[in-house]
Each structure stands twice: as structure tokens, then as C-alpha cells.
Length: 219
Image (tube, rainbow, N blue to C red; front, side):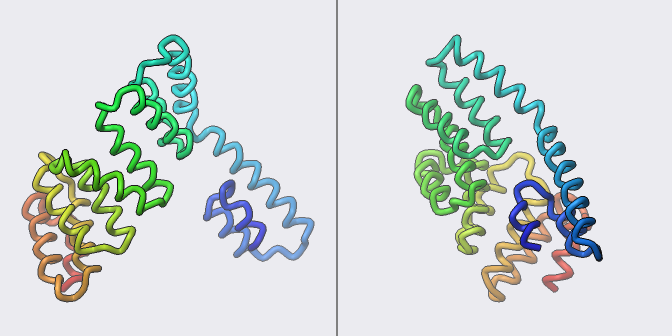
């Protein structure tokens, strides 16, 4: 078990589960199996984002020719973020802002980077500042709602979800599910609000299983 935990960045959970649950009598056999699955996992990780790696290389070449173009740093930062390279992403976002402070959308990318890195309080600080000037930005509202949930500030989360759904031209069922879950986690006194949220989703999308399951759970 400790060996699997020490390799959690390399081995997927399902592989560790196989190793921990499989009865292997010989330590030698265990080492052979662990080496084999680790090799597979490493190869899979190397192949997981080949397109992103290639795009980063291409954008870096463009930056060499246009080192003061902020959009290129923003573009590369978003690629780093897809790759979960948070430090590299934040570095590019910050430099892009230095080059052009008017690129306000970069603030959402910075907040998303903090969120993915589980620096939820920092994500909230960035979003709070951004939403002062862009209070109806649905992407920022949804991200702050999820940040509130991560911080267990469920009432604040419901307010942002409600506002975001009103601003969205094409909300999706998950938005209503997340809103209902936030109301549910806020306490029993918000049970009716949670049901109302699911009812609104059903009226918009029909009786989808994801919505009905939540409704049954609440009732």
C-alpha cells in the first residue's frame, strides 16, 4: 500500500487497487508486477497530452519571434493549465498581464489556475476583485460558486449559481444539479430551494436521469 501511495502521481488509482487487492504470495512476483504496471502507467502518461506538448512548443516558437505579444503568453498559459502545470501557467498569465493590463479575461484564467491547484482562498480573492467590474460574467460566477463550495460556503455558492444561470444563454443540466447540491449542503432549511432548482432544470431539459435522481434523494 505504501509503495502505491508513494507512486500516486504515476499510477492511476485503479492500478493501485489491483495491486493492493490481488493476493500475491511471492515478493518477487509482486516486484515484477509493480514494475510492469508502472512502466505501462509511465508510457500512458507520456502519451496523455502529445497534442498539448506540441502546441506549447509551437507557441514558444511564436513567442521567440514576438516576445512582447501578450496573447501568445495567454495562449501558452492556457495550454500549461490543460497540462496541469500550474506554476508555468501562472507565470505566463502574470507576464501577459504585465504586457497588457487590459486583458481582463486573464484574471479568470488565474483564478482557474488557483482553483485547480486547490488554492481556493486565492481563487476567491481574484474572482472577488474581477466581479466588482464584471458582475454578470457567467464563467467567473460559476467558478466562484464552485470555489465557495470547496470552501464550504454553500449559501454564497447558491447566490453565484443563481446569478450565473440567469446570465447563461445555454445553461446545462449540471448547473442545476450543482445549484441543488449547494442548497442541500447549506442545510435542511434550504430543501425547498434545492427542489425548486431541480424542478427548474426538469422544466428546461425534461426528466433527465441526473435531475430525477437528485429530486428523489431530496424528497
